[in-house]
Image: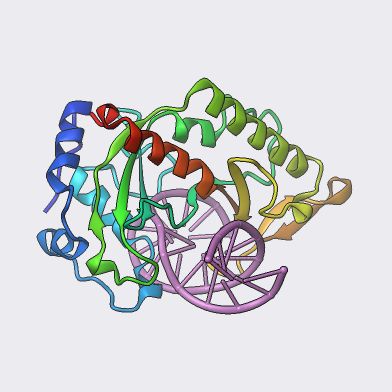
Length: 228
DNA sequence: GTCTGATCATGA
DNA sequence: TCATGATCAGAC
């Protein structure tokens, strides 16, 4: 079963409404997808199922999920108390050939321009099949939020540019941090090293801290009217 | 290897 | 307890 991309925001939000409250098991069943039992092997499945049923242009392309609408889809695990349980991956950190890269033309900014957040209701350790799809909502960064994200991006990319990638830990960045993002410790990629000499290092990704996504969620919970 | 989709698991 | 660092799966 293949679902066509939504042609309007309204249509997309209608689809989001239709699946709110549905357990992952049912969504998977509707789509004819079998869920793995091993929690380690369940990573990312919820996101893929949501892409499928909402008509996102699947694939490994570095583009917004709904390219026609310029909307990025992100799931976000929260518990029954409304607490965000995990950080959110945004995009890969460019580590080499980064001349001319700016916040304005960055992947991060492009992806965070407009995001469809879909909370996944769960508890730490609950099997994927028993997690439940929550009320999705559209979000655009406020100018203050964007200013801080830009600051984080700039600080982190400055270190990359100066060959200090190995000095970057997850502690840097107010809203956005840099952490390893690879298959495992043996996945390596080229980066700018000390004195500008190329080195091999772990691929890294930009991640939104839970304190940031928690803010977005809290705003929606306080002002339900912004759920369109 | 590089991207997408994330969350697991353990040390602090 | 919880964030950091590490990992898991699949397309290409």
